[in-house]
Length: 123
Image: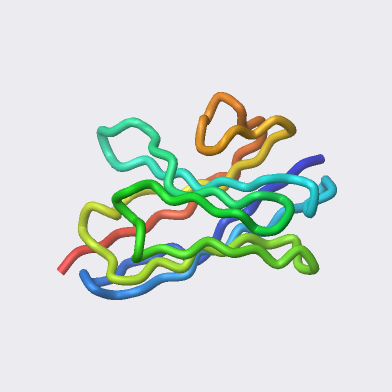
């Protein structure tokens, strides 16, 4: 059974940092691309970052470039999202996701989603 469990969310002041983790189980983790998405209150879900299964190719949406870093540890079946210089507009529930035919941050190509971890950025 595929399972994705996010953690690391919380409350942070603007300019602060948080590191989110996504621990995967139930599938061959190293073969799968992983994406991070977020959904702010009253807004649609947004793709944040993606990392490929091999060679660790990455992609970031424009609003987080230079501030967020995605990485993966295949030995631990874990993907991380390091978030620096946080802004109030980063406030959202963050989800990790994966699928067999992932295409970048197209949510329709993701089959499995975690339960999310909440990030609140406020002074």
